[in-house]
Image (cartoon, rainbow, N blue to C red):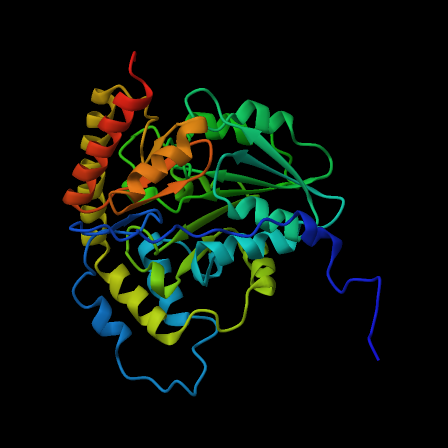
Length: 364
């Protein structure tokens, strides 16, 4: 007998949930080394001792420490915050998802910049909340005035990204402080600093310092980018204990494996080297930006390990030009994000950009 039904087991909110699309792998091209510049991965080799720590013997039949006590202790010492102000999870993505779970539901609102990290929209939609994306300024920065204006008595969460992924600019301390004076104390503000180690702008807000001034602020950071541990999934949130205790309720138990915890500890123990290497990447980024601007491109202030090329309707054509040269970049439809990679990858990308500009902007 055939079973028929007019009902669906799925929540109605799912109809509006976008599927997260990861950066593409590079296509093969004869005679060319492929380079993936689509996921903002660190292009440097792991620091000595990090892989060795992750490979230390452990019993896979046993669960990892669910509280990650050793890692929390090392992080607390490094950040100079009490351990009850910290929580770790499977990357910054799990932190952001958990925060969305504890604040958002049908009838509530979330305000975030657009374009920005794609997970913001996905997490909001999954919880049935009303999404209020706010467009960026002409300089591809957060329009903090418009974001503050968008807040109503139904707003529960505001998401900020500094440096902004995918466009690159930071939020300055003065901009941030002015913004926070307009935010009700019952609205949670998340400052996503996934790329903070690459910042060279001295005016940029320091989320860790800002936590001293705002009880409704949550700082989200990750070891995926500058630490080069994206494949091991380590992120953390810093906030006052009354927030951390609620975030803990929404995290998946045992999501941070024992090898990941060990690798994270080893990397934090060498954090001075991590920061030095991040600044090396920033120097390559700045040179890359200078050369693109020299070709005539309008490149926003780049403060992470990527560069934004605002291409509008030509984004797919540029992506195709890169694919032909075995380069994977991130096409976000209104622009293309290019991660900083190996020297050969950067040089090849510059060649593609120069040729593309001649073909599509002949009078520029």
